Length: 141
Image 1 (spheres, helix red, strand yellow):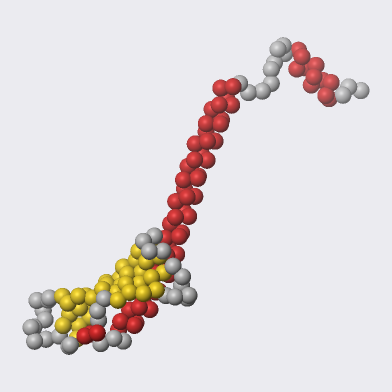
Image 2 (cartoon, helix red, strand yellow):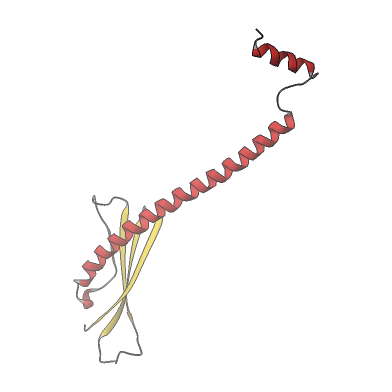
């Protein structure tokens, strides 16, 4: 009875000098393709992480700006002046600024209500990320 490995070995010997393996050129091409693919994946992963962190900031800053806007809405229009502060221990690293200025409008008469532009700015770690919310409010002073 003949063993299968013996047949395969003898057939390989009969073909002549058959060398098994890859050439240096084939290995270099394969490594280049893998390197290019890994660089593209790394770049895409880095961009995804950045977009995720900015998305989180935008969502959280929107909620904080709405909270400050609720505080502004409970304030008399005459008391609206520039102010700033932080969110203390509740949200460390986040600060807020409120700027208010009177705006002229062609639709409002001179003896009518005052129109104020209110800008609420939410900052993360001073200037790492910035979110601005601008709104208008009218009323009599």
